Image (cartoon, one colour):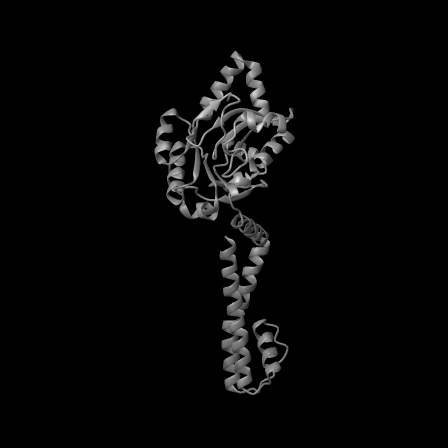
Length: 338
């Protein structure tokens, strides 16, 4: 039962109870009781307490009391039954918790939607949480989501309404990481239909599924089995290089990190060469590659390489060095403002 369904049932029960109390009070007032006595007589009647009768013993009031008992007692029992059922089964607290989670999800912007909470989905969620990224996890199996501290939605990720509940209109990326390639194709199709500009990453179990996922709308397709095989081979052939790259991208044992830094419109770095920008001298970070707006990489760029608007710098350094590089890239060129 959802929060809206529980709320609707509670409103129906309360409305029925209010109608019974109001109708009973009005009826006894008509037969001659004061408003307070009429309310008192109604409450004692429908609650089956019945201390004493305040109305005159005539046929009219007695018939009205019989009708009120038949209609009112059942209504009161229904209202209390709805509340008792919700409390005993724990629905009130569970549904209220889900309602609070839905409210938090509705406030997210520029977040990531992770579809599927298996081994790949859990790994994606863990790394996003470690990077302080906002994200929502969708999985059809609610038991998989039990006990997690992440924002979650139990539902079918191929359903457009479920994706909208996850904030598809405000998200910046979608990860299709369910257990089957067929489902991931449908997730990519749904995501692309709802948001043509959305960045979509899809997981593929079979190599044959990769072109289908791309045609379905995925921007990138990741095959964990192929990546795992490549890592094993790299560990055997170049173990030190492989271990270093693994540590700087995922590990916590070393202070260096490998990150990407976007050069925004009007940045003070735009239009300058690496030599003129003096990134190494000013920040301590080392630029390993530059990806231009056309998507092409310049690896190991020379000092005369120009930095342009929309470029992405792939740099390595300590946390402080990389923060300095980000701050420098965000400085606005005074000439650009004029």
